[in-house]
Image 1 (tube, one colour):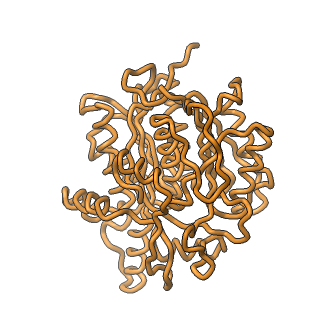
Image 2: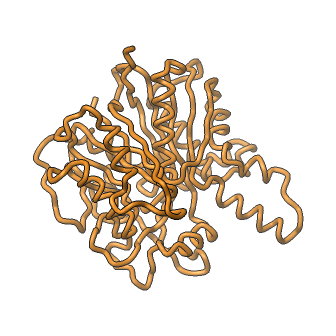
Image 3: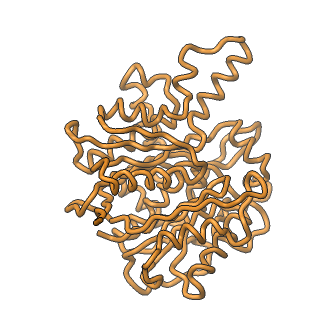
Length: 389
């Protein structure tokens, strides 16, 4: 059976990098990070928050419909990105398309506020349940876009967004849909979320941060964990078949899960990544992989085990390697889609974006094929291989 090519016909995001492709690319071309200090978890904390213009867009969406007034930021981020994506793709109300937007933690801020109020008053708000359920992101997007296709929400921790892309590819290849909107959204800059990351001993410590680079994602010699959280959403439009407006094509997908020693464990050579990359690159000449956007969250073990997995798969002839978490932090369920955005922009502009504090790697050929990795708690790895249209 001939399976159709899977085209990416549009991409949109809202993140600390901005809210349109020109802004995002401009930010990637400079060597400045997006971290600022906010008072969270009872102390000054480095985070990557939306810029003022993006926050204004979110505020306007909230005010645009009385029903949106009480929604969590994670839903509003996704609404903003989704509206722009389908406009770019040229989809309209007559198009039937599926929606799969996931989130690692869901309506974090709203849940914390509702629970705090319940503890103080002994009563829950009327809308507490429907506005904090995991499935409410895709449901609200379907409402907002008046779509008629299937809607799916899920949480597969930090690989959530790329799992959404996997789902979209599966639906399109099965013939059950022709178009799918996929992505992830996360609004984790809350006291309790930061507190949980600190409890795991993986969050960057202000007293040890290097001012120039608070998050040392991709520094494989660091002696401390430097993960920092960011917020945002990213979505892309997938369509079955060759398309004139295609930005890129998905030419390989891979996934794997590790057997866990404990809740956040990952093996020394990230077996799950080795398996997911090999699946995505099946029957493909490894020398044709021009770059890899790594998951690399900024933790000692997370960064190093992924590098070891890449070395296992590619041997000594490594592609160009990069990550964006030194710049925008870890956006949990949205992170894989924001990594895909970086990959797409590098394809479109034929410029490799490296980490500013790593040994410089010369780009000696055009960037035509890029592999994107993501993994989350539980060893759920996903690898997506894309090719320039």
